Image 1 (cartoon, rainbow over the protein chains, first blue to last red):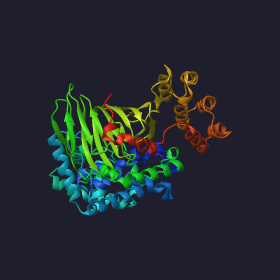
Image 2: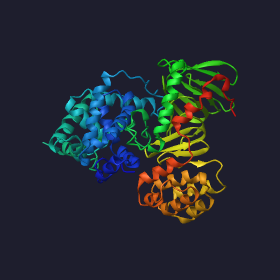
Image 3: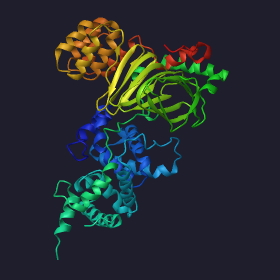
Length: 175
Length: 344
C-alpha cells in the first residue's frame, strides 16, 4: 500500500472520494494520515493525537465536496488538522482517551525515549516543529513537506537544518 | 574547514533516500514508536458526524417510515418512559453480573476480561444487554445518553439494544461495528470481526468501506479490506462459499455460475450488493436478480447494469427488508422488561 503523500497522482482519488467512493477516501487516508499525524503531534500531547487524526479525516469527509482544487488536498487536510489542534484546547472532550494498554506500545524504555524526543520537538520554535515532525516522524522528504505545507523548498531546508541542530543539542545526540 | 558532515546531514534531512547521517538516524529511531500506521488505525466512522447523503444511506430512507418513527417517538416521549430509558449520565458505570453470580461495575476506561470458562451479563446503560462469552476482552470507552462506545480486542458477545441507530458501537481491530437497533452476535479476533444479526440491522465499517447487514444474515470484516457482503444464514449450501470466492477473485466465472444457480429471491440483496461493488459479472448477477425479484420499474435492471445507482437503490429499497429506524421502535415490546427474551 502506498502511504507517501507525494507518490502518484492523488487527484483521481480525491475526485472519486468526492463522488462518494469510500474506498478512494480510505486510500487518501492511508496516504495522508502520517502528515496529519505529524501536524497534530507537533502541537498536542501524544495521547490525544491518534484519535484526532481520525477526527480530522472524518470531519474532512463531510467537507470534501467543498474542496474545489483536488490537487490541493494535502495542504487542505493539514490546514484542517491545524485548526483541529487549535480547537482541541477550547473543547471539553467528552471521551476518555484510550488507555495506553489498549494501544500496542513499544517497551517502556523505548516509549520513554520516544516521548522525550517528541517533547523536545514540541519545545522547539514553532517554525521548526511541524517540518521536523513531518521529516523525522512521518518520514516525508523535503519536497513532500514543501508541497504539503506550501512552504518554499528553501524555507523547508532552513527549517530542517536549524531545527534539527537545536533538537540534536537538546537531546544530547552527538553529531 | 570541513563541510562534509553538514552536507551529508542536510542531504539526508532533505531526502531520506540519500546516504544516512548517524545523528538523524539515531533520532529517527527514537521517534519510530511514535510513527502513525494508518493500516493499524483504520478510519472509524462516527455516523453522527457524517453527512448521510455523502455516504449514501439512501437505501435506508423512507419518508413513510420516518413519519412512522416520528409519530412513535412522540408517543413514547409522551409517557416519559423513553426519556428515562435513553438518558444516561456521562460516564456512569455499567452494571455487570458474572457467571459466578457476583455483581461488579464496568467504568469508563476499564477493561472487562473473561477467562475461557467465564461469562458475564452487562447492562448497556438502560438500553440493552450484552452477554459476554469466555476469552473476551473489551473496554468501555465512553458512555453517555444515546452514545455508548466500546473497544473489543477479542472474544464473543451477544448484544441486544433497544435504542436509535448507532447508539452502541464497538471498535474492533478490523473496523467498527455499530448497532442500528437490533440484536446480534459479534465474534472478534485480532484479524477479523464476524457478525450474525438476529434482528434489525448492523453496520460494519472500516477505512475501505461499509456494509449494512440485515436480520438473518451474517458478514465478516477483516483488517485491510472492505467488509464482506452479507449472506443470509439460511442460504443454500454452497452459496456462501461462492459469494466469498467471488469477492476474493471477481474475474473468475465459476463462483458466479454457482451463485446464479444457488441464489433464491431472498439472496437478491446479496447479489445487488455485489453489483454495487462493481463486480465484473454485474450483468449476469443483475439478470439473475431480475428473474428472482424483478426491479420496481421496467428497465431498471439495464439502467443498473449501465451504472445508474439510482436504479439500483430503487431496486434495493423494494426488497422486503426491515428499516433500521422501524426495527428498533416497532419492536417496542423489546423495551419492556417483562418481554425481555432469555439468551439463546
